[in-house]
Amino acid sequence: MISSKNLVLSLSLVLSAPSFAQTTLKESIQSYSEHVHSSYAETLRRGVLLQKALYAFTETPSLMTQTVAKETWKYAREAYGQTEVFRFYNGPIDRDGGPEGLLNSWPLDEAYIDYVKGAPNAGIINNTSEFPEITKELLESLNELDGEKNISTGYHAIEFLLWGQDFYTDGPGQRSYTDYVDAPNAARRAVYLNTIADMLVDHLASLEEEWRVGEENFRKDFESQKDTVALKNLLSGVIFMAGDELSGERMYVAYDTQGQEDEHSCFSDMTHMDIQWNYWGIENVIKATNLLNQPEVKGSAIALRIEERMTSLHSLLATIPVPFDQAIANDEGRAIILNSVEELEALARDLATVSKMLKAPVDY
Image (tube, rainbow, N blue to C red):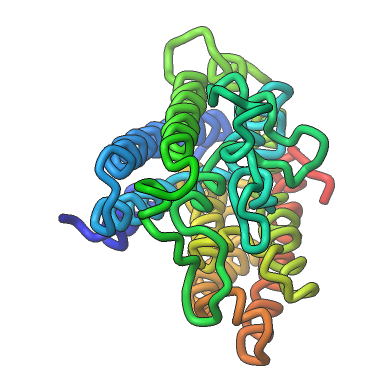
């Protein structure tokens, strides 16, 4: 079996192969479209593997099948995390009706889905009178109903149903596989898990379709825009992921509150990798589009500074101590996290300057 680490490395290498030749805006935009499609295609492929692993787990619950399901969840997240840079310009992922909220909403109120410590009958799974049948339509209707933390679907709902609540300083949640064998509502829990796995695949497939070449879809509209408009959109994704969503919502908020509930993957203790995958997504777009080799930018001081920042961030983020919920509480971890936040914000400012040089100004 190929290790998860190696698989991520191979994806990253394919997406980040540098080019040293000058390029045109049109070439950058077309390269971006192809990069987005290949990234979603890979995310869909891994989502299908996750779906199969979850069905195998619920059909034959055991420590082994649960472990395989957990490892496959991590594998699926690696690819999805690198696609989150394709947000923040009303594209297929987060326009009105887009699936982002159904795929990756967080933080999540665990008691909305299943039992928690001190509340053994909590959640949709245990509410058999109000929700006698668990279906896609029901769970989609309940997602974020009456509260942003009322999350019923997506990667983190699956994560909670595999790992359970995390009460441990040295590791993730420890949900037993017997929750799917002889615990109250075990059969409903399995149906719930498989249903949200099916929904995950449906939503990822819709994203892959929107970026296929040669079809009547979002990609066609994106590439038919004025070059500077399309460029501004793709740069908005990169700049706001670096300077707002990743550095702010996903890192500084947890740094500031020191609250476990404010970390991204709090059940599996994979937040440190969520951060790296999101950053790799930023770096992948910069390299895949060859933006720093546009004639207006190539060889400039700011182009060199961005390349230096990317090299620095790649190493810096890898040094965040694990688990993240303990790193935000100790001096060593907090110093690295704050330094990373500041570097990401500086990268965003530099990229905003590049956007002005390319006459596609992003207001950051």
